[in-house]
Length: 450
Image 1: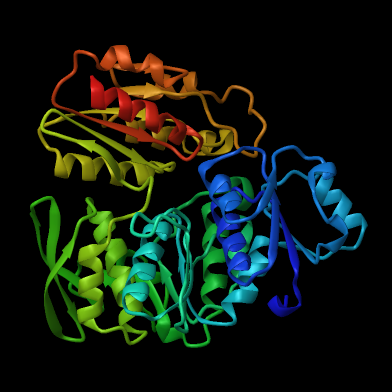
Image 2 (image 1 turned 60 degrees about the horizontal axis):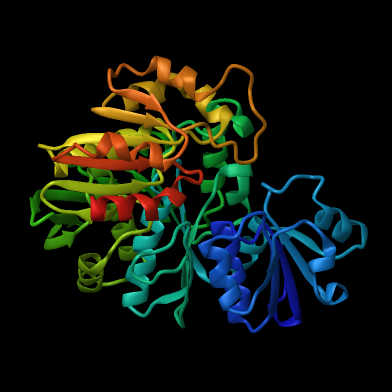
Protein backbone atom coordinates (compact mmCIF):
# COMPACT_ATOMS: atom_id res chain seq x y z
CA UNK A 1 0.00 0.00 0.00
CA UNK A 2 1.52 3.32 -1.12
CA UNK A 3 -0.24 6.38 0.30
CA UNK A 4 1.03 8.63 -2.47
CA UNK A 5 -0.68 6.52 -5.13
CA UNK A 6 -4.11 6.56 -3.46
CA UNK A 7 -6.77 9.11 -4.36
CA UNK A 8 -9.95 7.47 -3.02
CA UNK A 9 -10.35 4.85 -0.27
CA UNK A 10 -13.62 3.18 0.76
CA UNK A 11 -14.24 1.58 4.17
CA UNK A 12 -16.74 -1.23 4.79
CA UNK A 13 -17.54 -0.99 8.51
CA UNK A 14 -16.18 2.54 8.92
CA UNK A 15 -17.92 3.10 12.27
CA UNK A 16 -15.69 0.65 14.15
CA UNK A 17 -13.18 2.18 16.53
CA UNK A 18 -10.18 0.78 14.62
CA UNK A 19 -11.60 1.44 11.16
CA UNK A 20 -12.51 5.04 11.94
CA UNK A 21 -8.97 5.75 13.16
CA UNK A 22 -7.63 4.48 9.82
CA UNK A 23 -10.17 6.67 8.00
CA UNK A 24 -8.80 9.68 9.89
CA UNK A 25 -5.29 8.65 8.85
CA UNK A 26 -6.22 8.74 5.17
CA UNK A 27 -8.07 12.03 5.64
CA UNK A 28 -4.85 13.47 7.08
CA UNK A 29 -3.12 12.44 3.82
CA UNK A 30 -5.70 14.44 1.78
CA UNK A 31 -7.15 11.24 0.35
CA UNK A 32 -10.86 11.13 -0.50
CA UNK A 33 -12.59 8.77 1.96
CA UNK A 34 -16.03 7.14 1.86
CA UNK A 35 -17.57 4.51 4.08
CA UNK A 36 -20.43 2.21 4.97
CA UNK A 37 -21.72 1.15 8.36
CA UNK A 38 -24.91 -0.42 9.62
CA UNK A 39 -25.47 2.15 12.35
CA UNK A 40 -25.16 5.92 12.53
CA UNK A 41 -23.11 6.88 15.60
CA UNK A 42 -21.11 9.70 17.14
CA UNK A 43 -18.04 8.22 15.41
CA UNK A 44 -19.63 8.23 11.92
CA UNK A 45 -21.09 11.69 12.46
CA UNK A 46 -17.62 12.98 13.33
CA UNK A 47 -16.23 11.42 10.15
CA UNK A 48 -18.99 13.06 8.13
CA UNK A 49 -18.07 16.43 9.64
CA UNK A 50 -14.55 15.74 8.36
CA UNK A 51 -15.81 15.25 4.82
CA UNK A 52 -16.35 11.48 4.65
CA UNK A 53 -19.31 10.33 2.57
CA UNK A 54 -21.03 7.64 4.70
CA UNK A 55 -24.14 5.58 3.93
CA UNK A 56 -25.99 3.11 6.15
CA UNK A 57 -27.61 0.68 3.71
CA UNK A 58 -25.63 -2.03 1.93
CA UNK A 59 -26.41 -0.75 -1.55
CA UNK A 60 -23.93 0.51 -4.14
CA UNK A 61 -26.32 3.22 -5.39
CA UNK A 62 -25.27 5.37 -2.43
CA UNK A 63 -21.59 5.30 -3.35
CA UNK A 64 -20.31 8.19 -5.48
CA UNK A 65 -17.42 7.78 -7.95
CA UNK A 66 -17.33 4.01 -7.47
CA UNK A 67 -15.04 3.57 -10.49
CA UNK A 68 -12.43 5.88 -8.97
CA UNK A 69 -11.90 3.83 -5.79
CA UNK A 70 -8.26 2.75 -5.48
CA UNK A 71 -8.53 0.71 -2.27
CA UNK A 72 -11.24 -0.89 -0.14
CA UNK A 73 -10.58 -1.53 3.55
CA UNK A 74 -12.86 -3.89 5.44
CA UNK A 75 -13.19 -5.31 8.92
CA UNK A 76 -13.39 -9.10 9.54
CA UNK A 77 -16.68 -8.45 11.35
CA UNK A 78 -18.35 -7.80 7.97
CA UNK A 79 -20.47 -10.72 6.74
CA UNK A 80 -19.40 -12.58 3.61
CA UNK A 81 -22.71 -11.79 1.85
CA UNK A 82 -22.06 -8.02 1.99
CA UNK A 83 -23.01 -6.58 -1.41
CA UNK A 84 -20.09 -4.14 -1.50
CA UNK A 85 -17.54 -6.78 -0.56
CA UNK A 86 -18.78 -9.03 -3.36
CA UNK A 87 -18.77 -6.21 -5.91
CA UNK A 88 -15.22 -5.03 -5.19
CA UNK A 89 -13.93 -8.59 -5.08
CA UNK A 90 -15.52 -9.43 -8.42
CA UNK A 91 -14.22 -6.24 -10.05
CA UNK A 92 -10.59 -6.73 -8.96
CA UNK A 93 -10.44 -3.56 -6.85
CA UNK A 94 -7.76 -3.98 -4.16
CA UNK A 95 -9.29 -5.25 -0.92
CA UNK A 96 -7.36 -5.16 2.36
CA UNK A 97 -8.31 -6.04 5.90
CA UNK A 98 -7.84 -3.32 8.50
CA UNK A 99 -4.92 -5.28 9.97
CA UNK A 100 -3.08 -5.31 6.60
CA UNK A 101 -3.27 -1.52 6.32
CA UNK A 102 -2.23 -1.03 9.93
CA UNK A 103 0.69 -3.38 9.33
CA UNK A 104 1.88 -1.30 6.39
CA UNK A 105 1.74 1.88 8.47
CA UNK A 106 3.57 0.24 11.38
CA UNK A 107 6.60 -0.22 9.13
CA UNK A 108 6.90 3.54 8.57
CA UNK A 109 7.45 4.35 12.27
CA UNK A 110 9.15 2.95 15.37
CA UNK A 111 5.96 1.30 16.58
CA UNK A 112 5.08 0.56 20.19
CA UNK A 113 2.48 -2.21 19.92
CA UNK A 114 0.27 -2.82 22.96
CA UNK A 115 -1.19 -6.33 23.15
CA UNK A 116 -3.14 -8.36 25.70
CA UNK A 117 -6.58 -9.64 26.59
CA UNK A 118 -7.16 -6.64 28.87
CA UNK A 119 -5.70 -3.17 29.23
CA UNK A 120 -4.73 -2.50 25.60
CA UNK A 121 -6.77 0.64 25.12
CA UNK A 122 -5.88 2.34 28.38
CA UNK A 123 -2.19 1.47 28.06
CA UNK A 124 -1.95 2.60 24.43
CA UNK A 125 -3.81 5.84 25.21
CA UNK A 126 -1.37 6.60 28.06
CA UNK A 127 1.55 5.99 25.71
CA UNK A 128 -0.09 8.22 23.09
CA UNK A 129 -0.55 11.02 25.64
CA UNK A 130 3.07 10.77 26.76
CA UNK A 131 4.30 10.85 23.15
CA UNK A 132 2.04 13.79 22.28
CA UNK A 133 3.02 15.92 25.29
CA UNK A 134 6.69 15.08 24.60
CA UNK A 135 6.37 16.03 20.90
CA UNK A 136 7.49 12.51 19.95
CA UNK A 137 4.28 11.21 18.37
CA UNK A 138 4.32 10.18 14.74
CA UNK A 139 0.95 8.46 14.53
CA UNK A 140 -1.21 6.97 17.31
CA UNK A 141 -4.06 4.52 16.73
CA UNK A 142 -6.07 4.03 19.92
CA UNK A 143 -8.90 1.56 20.55
CA UNK A 144 -11.08 4.14 22.28
CA UNK A 145 -11.87 7.85 22.37
CA UNK A 146 -9.30 9.61 24.55
CA UNK A 147 -10.74 12.14 26.98
CA UNK A 148 -7.71 14.41 26.56
CA UNK A 149 -8.15 14.79 22.79
CA UNK A 150 -11.67 13.46 22.09
CA UNK A 151 -10.33 11.23 19.31
CA UNK A 152 -8.91 7.76 18.65
CA UNK A 153 -6.26 9.07 16.26
CA UNK A 154 -3.29 11.40 16.77
CA UNK A 155 -0.85 12.57 14.13
CA UNK A 156 2.36 14.42 14.96
CA UNK A 157 5.81 15.03 13.54
CA UNK A 158 7.74 12.49 15.64
CA UNK A 159 8.99 9.06 14.63
CA UNK A 160 7.31 7.00 17.36
CA UNK A 161 3.96 5.29 16.88
CA UNK A 162 1.62 3.47 19.24
CA UNK A 163 -0.86 0.89 18.00
CA UNK A 164 -3.32 -1.33 19.81
CA UNK A 165 -2.38 -4.86 18.73
CA UNK A 166 -5.66 -6.76 18.38
CA UNK A 167 -5.53 -10.52 18.93
CA UNK A 168 -8.97 -11.07 17.36
CA UNK A 169 -8.62 -12.90 14.04
CA UNK A 170 -4.84 -12.91 14.71
CA UNK A 171 -4.73 -9.37 13.34
CA UNK A 172 -1.67 -8.39 15.37
CA UNK A 173 0.51 -10.78 13.38
CA UNK A 174 0.43 -8.25 10.52
CA UNK A 175 2.23 -5.57 12.55
CA UNK A 176 5.94 -4.73 12.55
CA UNK A 177 6.57 -3.67 16.15
CA UNK A 178 9.74 -2.04 17.45
CA UNK A 179 8.52 -2.40 21.07
CA UNK A 180 5.81 -4.67 22.49
CA UNK A 181 3.89 -4.16 25.71
CA UNK A 182 2.02 -7.34 26.70
CA UNK A 183 -0.54 -6.71 29.45
CA UNK A 184 -2.19 -10.13 29.81
CA UNK A 185 -2.84 -13.47 28.07
CA UNK A 186 -6.14 -14.68 29.51
CA UNK A 187 -8.53 -16.79 27.49
CA UNK A 188 -10.89 -14.85 25.21
CA UNK A 189 -12.18 -15.02 21.63
CA UNK A 190 -12.58 -18.78 22.00
CA UNK A 191 -14.85 -18.68 18.95
CA UNK A 192 -11.59 -18.05 17.05
CA UNK A 193 -8.96 -19.82 19.18
CA UNK A 194 -11.04 -22.62 20.77
CA UNK A 195 -8.77 -22.92 23.83
CA UNK A 196 -6.41 -20.86 25.99
CA UNK A 197 -3.28 -22.66 24.78
CA UNK A 198 -3.95 -21.79 21.12
CA UNK A 199 -4.52 -18.15 22.11
CA UNK A 200 -1.26 -18.07 24.07
CA UNK A 201 0.63 -19.56 21.14
CA UNK A 202 -0.66 -16.72 19.00
CA UNK A 203 0.76 -14.22 21.52
CA UNK A 204 4.09 -16.07 21.48
CA UNK A 205 4.11 -15.86 17.69
CA UNK A 206 3.39 -12.13 17.93
CA UNK A 207 6.32 -11.49 20.27
CA UNK A 208 8.63 -13.26 17.80
CA UNK A 209 8.02 -10.37 15.39
CA UNK A 210 10.39 -8.24 17.48
CA UNK A 211 13.88 -7.90 16.05
CA UNK A 212 15.21 -6.62 19.38
CA UNK A 213 13.85 -9.07 21.99
CA UNK A 214 15.04 -6.79 24.82
CA UNK A 215 12.17 -4.44 23.87
CA UNK A 216 9.55 -7.01 24.87
CA UNK A 217 7.81 -5.60 27.95
CA UNK A 218 5.42 -7.87 29.87
CA UNK A 219 3.30 -7.55 32.99
CA UNK A 220 5.14 -9.25 35.85
CA UNK A 221 2.69 -12.15 36.06
CA UNK A 222 3.68 -13.24 32.54
CA UNK A 223 7.43 -13.29 33.18
CA UNK A 224 7.71 -17.09 33.30
CA UNK A 225 6.51 -17.36 29.69
CA UNK A 226 9.40 -15.37 28.20
CA UNK A 227 13.17 -14.87 28.27
CA UNK A 228 15.32 -11.71 28.02
CA UNK A 229 12.26 -9.49 28.44
CA UNK A 230 11.51 -6.53 30.69
CA UNK A 231 8.76 -6.61 33.33
CA UNK A 232 6.61 -4.07 35.15
CA UNK A 233 4.45 -4.36 38.23
CA UNK A 234 4.40 -4.10 42.01
CA UNK A 235 6.89 -6.91 42.77
CA UNK A 236 10.50 -6.31 43.77
CA UNK A 237 11.77 -8.46 40.87
CA UNK A 238 10.18 -6.27 38.18
CA UNK A 239 12.43 -4.08 36.04
CA UNK A 240 10.02 -1.23 36.64
CA UNK A 241 8.46 -1.39 40.10
CA UNK A 242 5.51 0.73 41.23
CA UNK A 243 6.03 1.54 44.94
CA UNK A 244 4.84 3.74 47.82
CA UNK A 245 1.25 3.88 46.53
CA UNK A 246 -1.24 6.19 48.24
CA UNK A 247 -4.71 7.50 47.34
CA UNK A 248 -4.77 11.27 47.91
CA UNK A 249 -7.60 13.53 46.70
CA UNK A 250 -9.06 10.77 44.49
CA UNK A 251 -5.71 10.20 42.73
CA UNK A 252 -2.93 7.67 43.05
CA UNK A 253 0.36 9.12 44.27
CA UNK A 254 3.30 6.74 43.79
CA UNK A 255 7.00 6.33 43.02
CA UNK A 256 8.73 4.08 40.51
CA UNK A 257 11.97 2.15 40.80
CA UNK A 258 13.84 1.68 37.53
CA UNK A 259 17.49 0.74 36.95
CA UNK A 260 18.03 0.78 40.73
CA UNK A 261 16.93 4.41 40.97
CA UNK A 262 13.76 5.68 42.65
CA UNK A 263 11.80 8.41 40.85
CA UNK A 264 9.31 10.10 43.18
CA UNK A 265 5.97 11.86 43.12
CA UNK A 266 4.01 10.46 40.20
CA UNK A 267 0.31 11.34 40.10
CA UNK A 268 -2.36 9.37 38.23
CA UNK A 269 -6.12 9.96 38.38
CA UNK A 270 -7.46 6.65 37.02
CA UNK A 271 -8.91 4.42 39.81
CA UNK A 272 -7.93 0.76 40.14
CA UNK A 273 -4.67 -1.09 40.65
CA UNK A 274 -5.13 -2.57 37.17
CA UNK A 275 -4.91 0.96 35.77
CA UNK A 276 -1.73 1.53 37.74
CA UNK A 277 -0.36 -1.58 36.03
CA UNK A 278 -1.41 -0.15 32.67
CA UNK A 279 0.44 3.05 33.55
CA UNK A 280 3.50 0.99 34.53
CA UNK A 281 3.61 -0.70 31.14
CA UNK A 282 3.19 2.63 29.37
CA UNK A 283 5.94 4.25 31.46
CA UNK A 284 8.43 1.45 30.76
CA UNK A 285 7.73 1.46 27.02
CA UNK A 286 8.44 5.19 26.91
CA UNK A 287 11.57 4.92 29.04
CA UNK A 288 13.12 2.32 26.71
CA UNK A 289 12.33 4.68 23.83
CA UNK A 290 14.28 7.52 25.48
CA UNK A 291 11.37 9.64 26.76
CA UNK A 292 12.52 11.50 29.87
CA UNK A 293 11.16 10.77 33.35
CA UNK A 294 10.15 14.43 33.68
CA UNK A 295 8.07 14.32 30.49
CA UNK A 296 6.45 11.02 31.52
CA UNK A 297 5.60 12.33 34.99
CA UNK A 298 4.08 15.51 33.60
CA UNK A 299 1.98 13.59 31.05
CA UNK A 300 0.64 11.11 33.64
CA UNK A 301 -0.55 13.93 35.90
CA UNK A 302 -2.63 15.42 33.05
CA UNK A 303 -3.96 12.12 31.66
CA UNK A 304 -7.79 12.08 31.72
CA UNK A 305 -8.51 8.53 30.58
CA UNK A 306 -10.53 6.96 27.77
CA UNK A 307 -14.25 7.15 27.24
CA UNK A 308 -15.98 4.02 28.52
CA UNK A 309 -13.02 3.03 30.74
CA UNK A 310 -13.97 3.89 34.34
CA UNK A 311 -15.72 6.87 32.77
CA UNK A 312 -17.24 8.97 35.58
CA UNK A 313 -20.29 10.84 34.25
CA UNK A 314 -21.63 12.13 37.56
CA UNK A 315 -20.23 12.32 41.08
CA UNK A 316 -21.53 13.91 44.26
CA UNK A 317 -21.78 12.96 47.93
CA UNK A 318 -24.98 10.94 47.45
CA UNK A 319 -24.38 9.04 44.23
CA UNK A 320 -21.92 8.34 41.43
CA UNK A 321 -22.48 7.18 37.85
CA UNK A 322 -19.66 5.29 36.08
CA UNK A 323 -19.68 3.64 32.65
CA UNK A 324 -17.16 0.98 31.60
CA UNK A 325 -16.45 -1.21 28.56
CA UNK A 326 -15.64 -4.33 30.65
CA UNK A 327 -16.91 -7.46 28.87
CA UNK A 328 -14.79 -10.29 30.35
CA UNK A 329 -15.05 -11.68 33.92
CA UNK A 330 -11.52 -10.55 34.80
CA UNK A 331 -12.25 -7.04 33.55
CA UNK A 332 -15.42 -6.89 35.64
CA UNK A 333 -13.46 -8.12 38.69
CA UNK A 334 -10.88 -5.35 38.24
CA UNK A 335 -13.55 -2.71 37.64
CA UNK A 336 -15.60 -3.58 40.71
CA UNK A 337 -12.52 -3.86 42.92
CA UNK A 338 -11.60 -0.33 41.86
CA UNK A 339 -15.13 0.92 42.60
CA UNK A 340 -14.96 -0.61 46.07
CA UNK A 341 -11.50 0.88 46.67
CA UNK A 342 -12.53 4.43 45.76
CA UNK A 343 -16.13 4.29 47.10
CA UNK A 344 -15.91 1.86 50.04
CA UNK A 345 -19.04 3.05 51.83
CA UNK A 346 -21.46 3.13 48.92
CA UNK A 347 -23.87 0.51 47.62
CA UNK A 348 -22.86 -0.73 44.15
CA UNK A 349 -25.62 -1.18 41.57
CA UNK A 350 -24.63 -2.69 38.23
CA UNK A 351 -26.30 -2.75 34.80
CA UNK A 352 -24.59 -5.37 32.63
CA UNK A 353 -25.04 -6.19 28.96
CA UNK A 354 -23.38 -9.52 28.02
CA UNK A 355 -21.44 -9.31 24.75
CA UNK A 356 -21.60 -12.29 22.36
CA UNK A 357 -23.42 -15.59 22.89
CA UNK A 358 -20.14 -17.51 22.59
CA UNK A 359 -18.37 -15.43 25.24
CA UNK A 360 -21.34 -15.77 27.60
CA UNK A 361 -21.31 -19.55 27.07
CA UNK A 362 -17.52 -19.89 27.48
CA UNK A 363 -17.31 -17.79 30.66
CA UNK A 364 -20.74 -18.37 32.21
CA UNK A 365 -19.37 -19.32 35.65
CA UNK A 366 -16.84 -16.47 35.57
CA UNK A 367 -19.49 -13.87 34.75
CA UNK A 368 -21.76 -15.23 37.48
CA UNK A 369 -18.98 -15.02 40.06
CA UNK A 370 -17.88 -11.51 39.01
CA UNK A 371 -21.37 -10.05 38.98
CA UNK A 372 -22.23 -11.61 42.34
CA UNK A 373 -19.90 -9.04 43.94
CA UNK A 374 -22.50 -6.35 43.22
CA UNK A 375 -25.12 -5.35 45.75
CA UNK A 376 -27.79 -5.19 43.06
CA UNK A 377 -27.82 -6.19 39.38
CA UNK A 378 -29.92 -5.27 36.35
CA UNK A 379 -29.13 -7.59 33.45
CA UNK A 380 -29.79 -6.79 29.78
CA UNK A 381 -30.27 -9.30 26.94
CA UNK A 382 -27.10 -10.58 25.25
CA UNK A 383 -25.73 -8.25 22.58
CA UNK A 384 -25.10 -10.53 19.56
CA UNK A 385 -22.68 -8.34 17.54
CA UNK A 386 -21.44 -10.62 14.74
CA UNK A 387 -23.05 -13.83 16.07
CA UNK A 388 -26.23 -15.83 15.69
CA UNK A 389 -27.97 -17.02 18.87
CA UNK A 390 -26.79 -20.20 20.59
CA UNK A 391 -29.61 -22.42 21.81
CA UNK A 392 -30.07 -22.23 25.57
CA UNK A 393 -27.58 -19.36 26.06
CA UNK A 394 -29.37 -16.24 27.23
CA UNK A 395 -29.47 -13.70 30.04
CA UNK A 396 -32.01 -15.73 32.00
CA UNK A 397 -29.49 -18.58 32.25
CA UNK A 398 -26.78 -16.18 33.42
CA UNK A 399 -29.12 -14.56 35.93
CA UNK A 400 -29.94 -17.94 37.45
CA UNK A 401 -26.23 -18.53 38.19
CA UNK A 402 -25.70 -15.20 39.98
CA UNK A 403 -25.87 -15.42 43.79
CA UNK A 404 -27.66 -12.15 44.48
CA UNK A 405 -31.08 -11.54 45.99
CA UNK A 406 -31.46 -8.21 44.24
CA UNK A 407 -31.28 -9.09 40.53
CA UNK A 408 -33.54 -8.50 37.56
CA UNK A 409 -33.61 -8.61 33.74
CA UNK A 410 -34.50 -5.32 32.07
CA UNK A 411 -34.81 -4.30 28.42
CA UNK A 412 -34.37 -0.52 28.54
CA UNK A 413 -32.86 2.18 30.71
CA UNK A 414 -36.31 3.51 31.63
CA UNK A 415 -37.04 0.27 33.53
CA UNK A 416 -34.08 1.07 35.75
CA UNK A 417 -35.21 4.46 36.98
CA UNK A 418 -38.11 3.45 39.30
CA UNK A 419 -35.68 1.18 41.19
CA UNK A 420 -33.29 4.07 41.72
CA UNK A 421 -35.86 6.68 42.79
CA UNK A 422 -35.53 5.99 46.51
CA UNK A 423 -31.87 4.96 46.53
CA UNK A 424 -29.19 7.05 48.26
CA UNK A 425 -25.46 6.68 48.81
CA UNK A 426 -24.82 4.42 45.81
CA UNK A 427 -22.63 3.94 42.76
CA UNK A 428 -24.36 3.02 39.51
CA UNK A 429 -22.10 1.23 37.00
CA UNK A 430 -23.14 0.43 33.42
CA UNK A 431 -20.95 -2.37 32.07
CA UNK A 432 -20.54 -3.94 28.62
CA UNK A 433 -19.12 -3.73 25.10
CA UNK A 434 -22.34 -3.73 23.08
CA UNK A 435 -24.67 -0.77 22.63
CA UNK A 436 -25.19 -0.11 26.35
CA UNK A 437 -23.35 3.17 25.82
CA UNK A 438 -26.54 4.43 24.15
CA UNK A 439 -28.09 4.46 27.64
CA UNK A 440 -25.56 6.99 28.96
CA UNK A 441 -27.29 10.29 28.03
CA UNK A 442 -30.66 9.30 29.53
CA UNK A 443 -29.12 7.82 32.67
CA UNK A 444 -26.94 10.90 33.16
CA UNK A 445 -29.94 13.17 32.65
CA UNK A 446 -32.07 11.15 35.09
CA UNK A 447 -29.39 11.12 37.79
CA UNK A 448 -28.65 14.82 37.34
CA UNK A 449 -32.31 15.74 37.80
CA UNK A 450 -33.55 13.06 40.24
